[in-house]
Image (cartoon, rainbow, N blue to C red):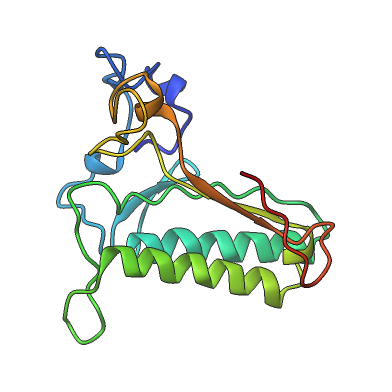
Length: 176
């Protein structure tokens, strides 16, 4: 929530009261009446007012930054941490005033990122990793523990890695 590494905010773990931010940490919640729609964000040491849905803003900025790096001939690293899959589950407000779907919006943005990487010629040299956070709330019955525990069920992360680096068209490599 601060946009900084958790250790800077005092967080050392996700269990046993070690998940508390220090009192001098500034978060998005420090802006009154903040929302996922048109949020006030803390960006590069500045508070900025934005227009749009948070996930669209995060992915849009990442795509612009990657494009800037490509034009400059520099490598990039983008770490995007969407917050919409956690409460308070505030949906996007669509142009017609209706409410959109949170996960559909996230899926659309991942698709936009993949399309951008393809169209800009970067997908051939980019590793895209999509992963969850710290386990499922309902737990995985095959693993010990669940979300909020230090056991496998709370720390094992599911994810997908996608790359075309060193691959041949039509060749699939599976690992089980």
